Image 1 (tube, one colour):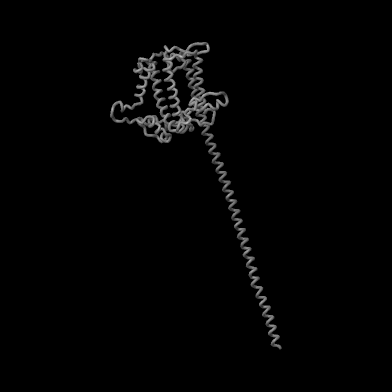
Image 2: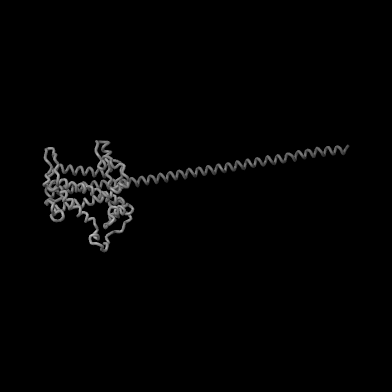
Length: 369
């Protein structure tokens, strides 16, 4: 019954949050809240994605986050980070929203600890159930989350690019490297390869659905938390909200003093920041490696071009020398042929002179007679 009430109460409220005010007030002047489509957003598909997700609102970036350059990276890297963050938080919110319903209405029958302690009663609110869960169990949950974050930041131990360096936002790396080196474990996405043959068009449509559901779940889970932490803050949930006198933003507030819990929170936040910085450091290193590789490639290309130019010069010089030698040889051959021809022409003249001389002698002799 509580699930039905929660569904009926939260979904209309969340849907209202997605509906523009102009639709609530009828045909009124459009609010000039839409920002001009930035070049970076258009180039990275954000404008088209926004129109697919919500054709009425469209692209809306009042803080111009798509034009920022986080950690000294490019706007494309920043967009990759923001898209990854939204998809990740949407998935966490969907799990939390469903978990809130389950914890409020269904009690796990098996033991919660090795000592045989049961799970917290459903008479408690989900926030109180968290406080009633043993500290070691909560630390285990946060540790697993941290390990999953590290695995994501480092691309699953493979050569997958970082999501700020071209990897598809929201695409969690597989555990193939873990399976190959440690033991078998299912992948988080599609562990049974049921979507292996899904078309790219269908994948794109489901991604838009996931983004919308994640945004709705973020509003829904915060609606539940606000209704429990501040009674009356969400009127449509008053009938099912259970007041919680703790602080939902201090995960260990029930175990330690505020100061100690704040220290734990700071350390946890520092740990997550360290993971994010590790990812940014990896991206920076990849940029440096890419730049160095580009320089090496350019140097190798220049060296190869110089070698080819030198080889071409040598070949041209050799061809010119050969042409000169051939020309000289032809000139010599032509000169030799000309001398032989002159000799041939001179030889008949001498013979004719000899014949004329012989004839003259014979004529003289005849005269004497």
